[in-house]
Length: 394
Image (cartoon, rainbow, N blue to C red; front, side):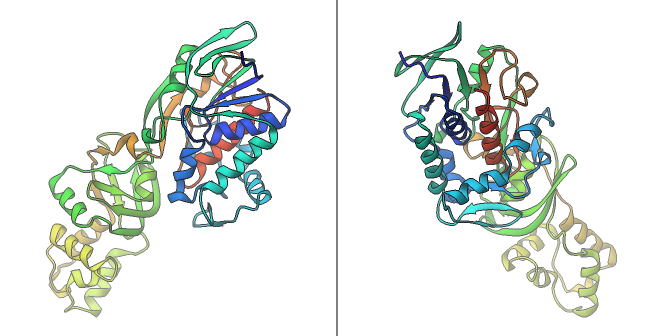
C-alpha cells in the first residue's frame, strides 16, 4: 500500500503549487489526477498564453460569502512571489493591460515551470488515476484508488469547480466536502457570456456577431466594470460582460454605457451646431463601426440630418447610448464559464491553514472553495496563494 504523508487530489494550478511547496518542505507528496495531463486549464487559459497573475491583486478583487477569508493566504504568497518564480525559470512575460500578466510564448511555459518544481522537490505525480472512496483512518485518511489502497496523514482537495467540463471538471471536491460534514454554498457559472432571447436584441447581436466595442461601462447590482464588450450570435461576451456576470442573477437588468468617456448630450449638440446636414448614423460611424452605427440607427432611432432633431430627441438618444438596459435570458453556463461561483463554505475552513474545521487533516485549496476572482489573473493568484498556504501545514 502507498503511504505518503500528503495526498493531493487535483493536478491543476492549486494542486501543483501545493505539491511542490509541501515537497520542498520535506514532506512525501502523492499528487493524483483523473485526467491524462496535468494543468489542462492552465494550458487553455488566456487564449493559450496564460494570464498567470495580476500586478494589482487585492482582496477586493474576490467574491465570497466570507470576504475576509482570502486575505491571509493572499498576503502570505503575493503576485510578486509568483512573478519571482516565473523570473527564476526565465519565462518571458508581458503586461497586456490593467496589470494582467501573460506569457510571451505560451501557457505551457507556466505548466512546465510548475512540473519542473514538482520534479525537483520529489513529488510523485500519477495521472489517469481515479479515487473511488475516501474514509477517515486513525492517523489521517485511507483512499481507494485505481492504483490500489493509499493511506496518508493529510489530504488536500484541489479538484476545482464545475466550469469547462470538457477539460475534466467534476463535482468530486464538493462530494468529499459533503461527506466530511461541510456546507456547500450554491454553485453557478461565473465569468461567462450572456445569452439573449428577446427577438429584437437577438437580431441586433446576431447581425453584429464578432463586433467588439472598446471600454464600455457595464453595470449590475451596484457593480461596474469598464472593459470591452463583444457581440456574439448567442448574445454578449467580452471582458466587461464576463466580469459583470459574476454579480448578475437571473431576472436582473444589466446597464451598458457604450460611450462612457464621452459627454454624449454635449457631443450631440456640438455635432448639431457644427455639422447640421450630417446624418446621425454617419456621425455615430465615427464612434462605432459603420455597420454598428447603421444597425443602432435602424433599431433604436430613425437616422436623419442632425438639424432635424429637437433637443428632447437628442437627449433621448444620448440616454439610450449611455444607459442601454437589457435583461439577459441566461448565461452560456459551465460549458464556457471560466470559473464556478460558490462552493465549500469558507466559514468551516481555517483561513490560516486551509484545513477543515470539521475533519482534521483535510484541506481545501483553489476554486473548490467559495472564493472567486475577477477576470484578469486573479483566480490563478488565488490558486497559487491558497495552495502555498495549505502546503505550510500539510
